[in-house]
Image (cartoon, rainbow, N blue to C red):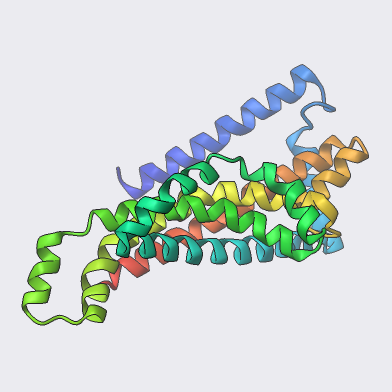
Length: 248
């Protein structure tokens, strides 16, 4: 598919989405589905007041911190278990059990342990990302070509060279795939975390609008969260293309 056709398809999709939204607003009423104009007007008002970028920045900081911690920890745990088969056999059942727990269900426990400050919010996002990145990194390490590793060792490659030139290029696509899958869940976790006691952020705005029965404010927050996901996906795709391209 050519670039022009892709752009045309995306434009057609946006037009179809806007049409469905407008029809839904007309059929069920503005309270249940506010019109596009109302939501756009609210976005413009919030932009002029400076709250739009403030909310976007607050949620982005929380998302970046939690995603970074979760990604590093997920990759580290996967690598450690792959290097220690006995430890892997010992802790895998516990990891599987913990992975089955809904991360959003940990909110009351995190609040009980750490209060309603910055720490439980970051931890909730980090835990959401950690297990997804861990699963994909663990699977990626299993796909490393054993013959290629053996050949590199025969030619005298050090552990650092082996990791850099063989393991990392093999696992990197899995890590980025894990981040791509985890990103929407991380945004959802960040919004839920901001419901707790945040004074700024997209999640705080949605919760405040809900308490005031402001459906336009709720939809405005949802649209802003969607924009954040799309922006993060774009940045992630760019970094992935750059990182995989420069691999030797």
